[in-house]
Length: 240
Image (cartoon, rainbow, N blue to C red):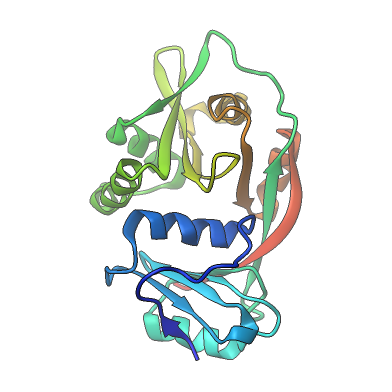
């Protein structure tokens, strides 16, 4: 049985698990009192912990989990995407968990990265890199601004000369590690080494914390070339 959590999250989940890290970060930002950000647990044997936010369901579970119940639950919620650390069905696409190692030193006077709260500039880069639309700004801003205010996220922007060229979003787990997402280079500046420089400078800004990210197979080689190592897999079901 899957139950909604009210109050504190249950203890003893692996803190180095990338999905658990995200769930814990959103718990610190929102708590369990909002209907737009909800947390769930399963039976003791399956060790399930889940977060539903923004139409996406994040599920940590072991091999004892009732996979069909999780799929049915995600459909009941209307989840447009499900990310899990076990393969829930044949629909699941394999993603690769990448962890930072020795980064190439590529920062220079023309390429500078810094923390920012210039949300509009960051979103303009994301629009170009991910083909987002202006109507998505308000929802993105509300979530991102809240996480920044609560100290669990920071935004990074990289400039090429005076031009904003790339961005990444940091989701903190603890003082030794963090999760990196929304990595984007402006479309007209791609293929110029800016993405590599962004990752290298981000590592410097984060005082060489362990950085974890999730990527698809088609960009895994890029992250390996940037000093990342594949350390595990996750799975995603994307619905139309």
